[in-house]
Image 1: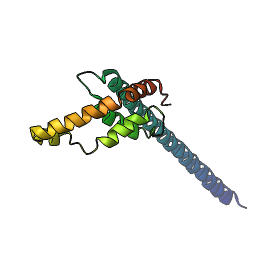
Image 2: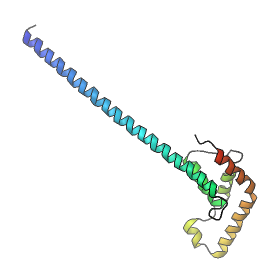
Image 3: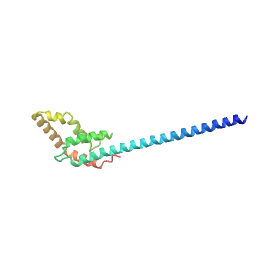
Image 4: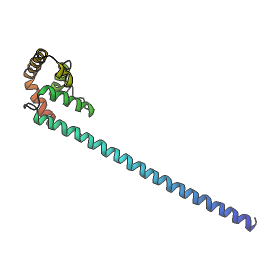
Length: 152
């Protein structure tokens, strides 16, 4: 093999090595960026999850006051539990939240409530008060169980 051929093969080999090293370095940087995005997404997911858990605790602290009745709290709590992918409908104490939500599902909310005639509002309010009285003890146990529940 002549020196010229050897030099050409050597330069081509060095070129292949340089290109390979550049490609490997580029892929490592892309992997690092990908990992950072995944980590950021996981952090954001945990933050959102914690916000929902905190919202449940806030609702539980104010439920039963003039600000928030058990019907509305149950609907909101069940919605938050659904967002957390926590199905506690079979839990001995917490199931009351699910039952109240199911029993009041037909009652209009928000704008629809405002559009109801006064007589219909009275009828629905009496129905809701009846459910709250019927489930009062179970809802208190649900409140304590949810406050102590470990969402981890």
